[in-house]
Length: 356
Image 1 (cartoon, rainbow, N blue to C red):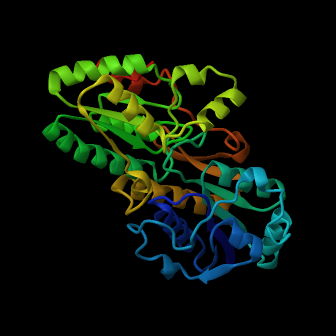
Image 2: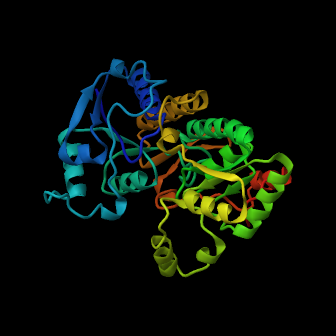
């Protein structure tokens, strides 16, 4: 009987349960009986041997359930060789748990940091399969990650709701969308929601160009929607050396970038300026139909890789095909929004300002 370990690590998202379900259903159909060891709260459960022994039927009904039945936590890769607070060495402890349970494979559902740790464990000799989870869609090597489309839907719905109140009251709304380092959610939701301005971390903005775009919109329609990613920064700060840039950003007294931009809008316009932040709603709730679809395919592929004993692989989506790539191709690399992305050019044709 195959013994499979499974964990969810890092931030939660809508399709973690759906992806685990797909993996387990695939394993059950390929192997018949299978033992599933679900580690509690991510890598922390693997370190301390804290797990639940689950049956395939325990995954029934999870396709539409958000969150993760295993719980999750963050264990930054940059601290992987630092001991736990009680002195436990992380990597040796994880290897011991794996070997003590006589696991045939470990399936890791996680984002960039989690997949770097998964690759490290693979290098240490464990049979590991990675599944690409993150609402940010920033895992290098895959066109889509599970959780991304559901987050877009939530963010777009929030923009839709703000749109009507902005129009009713002739207000300028600054909406802050999740994305510290990359702006995929803001780009997609901003276009889908009809935003007038979209500000991304990859494209430092000139506030004067934002003023101009908002002024034009307010003259025409009396209201405007600015969608800004959490990590968006102005050009004058972006051009500073990294150390100076970080110090400058740390000096800010604003709760977040949306409040700073709103304040700058107040200096220029007499309109009522408001801030709206959908926040963690973007990673909560049930997965949408696309995420359920792609998660099922990802899970099936993971099961097939285990069947073939093709380990050290990350399951990815490329050109609408679910395939597997060596973990080293992706580990440690972020997928940024390409400034030549056709979606950006299309958006500019529609009159959307990016502040560049």
